[in-house]
Length: 269
Image 1 (tube, rainbow, N blue to C red):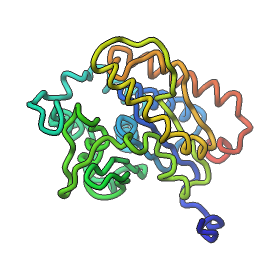
Image 2 (cartoon, rainbow, N blue to C red; image 1 turned 90 degrees about the vertical axis):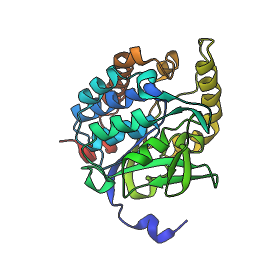
Image 3 (cartoon, one colour; image 1 turned 180 degrees about the horizontal axis):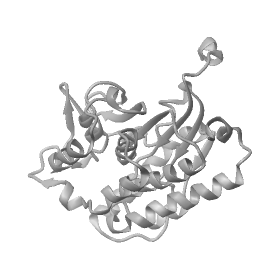
């Protein structure tokens, strides 16, 4: 450990880490609404996969409720194009066009809140955090679930879903923040599930992620992990509002029980 860095004043008071989780990551927007109502707004956000999408929209000035509306009519079928398997069954052109239309900021530097987006370098087998330059392509890369989606090529490097190596990106901002609020939209809950190809694939993938989130969960000053999220599937797009409300209500309950916690004293209005 860099001892001097440990004692240095951190550049950000409150950081927010948002996990991946498909449409379940819409709970992040509900969490953001509850935080705002308690006078808490993050100074920096780190996101992976769908958590990066929510983080980007919020950093771009969208309110939590506006983010929920954007997600209400999104479906897997309309956001992807099927293709002959060359690196993945689906192309993400439509999804990238959607982000280009909705995000006013086109570069990280244009966002009102600093954002870090995590993707996986498929060529070298490493986790990569994007913080500057073009915004849209790293988000698409972070969401490119292996096999289903074609890897995203950026500057000659092939990237896939950031959750492959880091589905809960707390460590990417830990050293730069006084306090960290972490939101895990994919708690490990072995509930009943639908016997479909997509659900079996994502359930298996979800179990694989358990090992790479344990350490990051321990790095949080406040962990928000709605246990009932296990009742939803990754592509339950018709349950978006329920998922949003679950994130909101869970966070409200946690905040009410921890009003004297110093993490809230930092940012309360």
